[in-house]
Structures are given as structure tokens and as C-alpha cells.
Image (cartoon, rainbow, N blue to C red; front, side, top):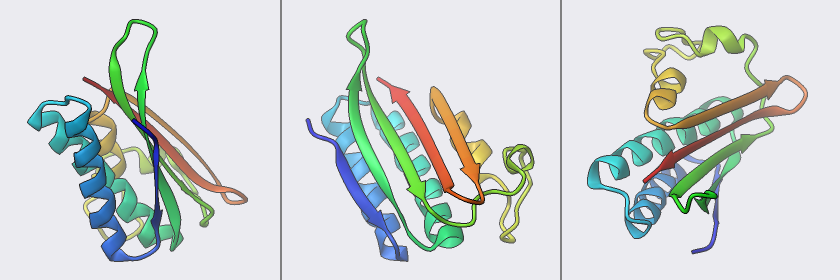
Length: 132
């Protein structure tokens, strides 16, 4: 199965990303619960790209580890303003956009691996992995 790249520029792109992630997860053999977890993460992180950076992309990569486990890696990249205080952004309840502050920390809880890099000069890159 090939990787997919989805442009994230407008609100409807969030739905496209969520649906494509769910489709890939189903095709890779993820349980319905894990399909929902991955779709939720895709929706939250894609919304952050559109809302805070204005544009970016999602790369969805089917992966296999050395033990033969199947997984799905989702990479969200943008060249927006970056996250000023990454530690604060990863705390429940922190929001600069008037939301509930559940997006980043909630997404982290729904996956097995979570990495985030952000700087004002380069934007933000979030990479998550969930294994079957």
C-alpha cells in the first residue's frame, strides 16, 4: 500500500483527511475502534494546520516494523507561525484559539508514538504512529 499526501488548506480538506485515514486504517486491518482513534487524530491535527497555519499537508504512511507489525504513520506539516510554547500547548486545557485545549494532548493519548517539532522559522511538524 502506498503513502498518501493530502493538502490541508480549507475546512473541507479536514473531512478528506479524516476519511482517507479511516479508509487506510480499515485496509490495514485496524479494528473499528482504532480506525475511529486514527480518524479523530487526523481530524484534530488537520484542523490545527488549517486553523493556525492556513495551509500544510498530511502524509499518511503504512509502515511495518522489524517484528512484522503493521502500523499507520500520520505526518502533519506546515510552514505557519509555529507554536510559541510547546510545553504549554501539550497540557490539557491550554489553547490560543479559544478551544478546549484538548487537540494536541488528546491526540497524543490516542496513538502509540507522538513527536512534535515546532519553531517560528519553520512551522510545525507532528508525526504520530498507531500499531495494529
